[in-house]
Image 1: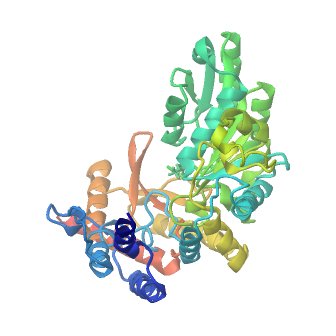
Image 2: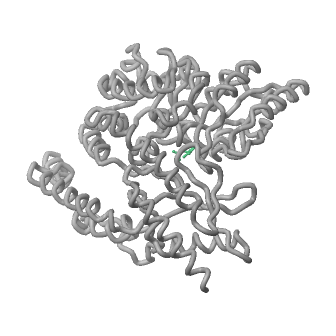
Image 3: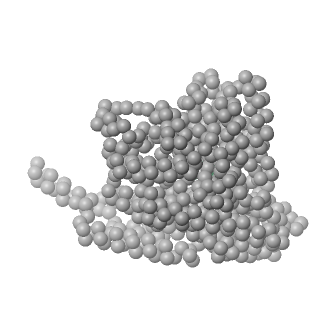
Length: 479
Ligand SMILES: *Cc1c(COP(=O)(O)O)cnc(C)c1O
């Protein structure tokens, strides 16, 4: 017995590296990170390479392991240089973020001490830190102290949790479902449809409310639809406004929509995953006026607070709604739940979770809010700069003046089809790799998008992006 235990302890020993091994592992990881970060300025924003069939990252795990050095080599070859490079300042597709180094350090420390962030009893400090992050966001939104919320894995999950809370607060179940109407625009994020389905509300009638020429929800159209539905004996259940649409960055008129929600007793949800943190900037805070009227709101720190992926935030004006939706108990939790402080686990679907508050709290504490505000304001000005420069170039056409930091635009060739030209252009951009832009369809028209969100995107990057776009467009023209 003793021999067997000694033997097993010995064989498992590598799970606990000694001080020298820790120093060596950290040095290797740190050197790798330094080389990676030092090369970003010249690295491609996209590589269409694929992970080959015989790539080492596909190899089966062995009993003995292959060592850290070889693993770093695999990361470098088949992970960190393949696909979209979301850390590049010239990556302006979808909604970027960048991935703050200070957050990476926070993640490292959180993983080393492995604080149990789900329950206040287990780690009062980790809970306090998440709470602190939520309070800061709640102040920005204008919620009262009785709000509730949590840091989720992302915006989709946060939107899902909001819709579950709305469903429970309005008792939307059984035959009520097909009479409970949801209102949003065609520019609402597709995760809302997914959340409705996941929460059992797939049969709710959904009204896509018309938008104005700047792709913001038309409040008069919303009002008419609400009235029409009430006349038909239906119940207005949920109004979803988007504060910063993914397509065009448009902000729906938050206060007028909120007033209608109150008048028609509907739950008012704001999806501000991309846009909400622009409320930190004086240039745009007026657009966010009325956020405080909502019943729930989602923000994505892994977008506009530049955090690495894995951090969204849900806030609900009245914490009771979250407590109701997530109430549960278990005998094996009896020591943990006598503490009255609200725990993340009592207001969200998760229990054991990564101490993700640290990756947000640490950079805000160390660096202060000012550089975040400046970084976001810079993005707003860069979007205007891009908009102005592109609209001055011959044959380039822009959409409406951007509300935030997304610009839609396209090249209109003389005498040939614009849609297929811009499709070719996106293909050429992706093949080239120096920059990355994505595309969308607006009213059936193929448009290009430029989303300035990454903290590493500066004026020089925007100039480079315009140079590459014009260069590649002219190459297509001569073909
Ligand atoms: C990104 C985004 C989402 C989805 O959030 P994830 O963090 O990607 O899950 C939802 N709504 C809007 C407006 C977004 O921009």
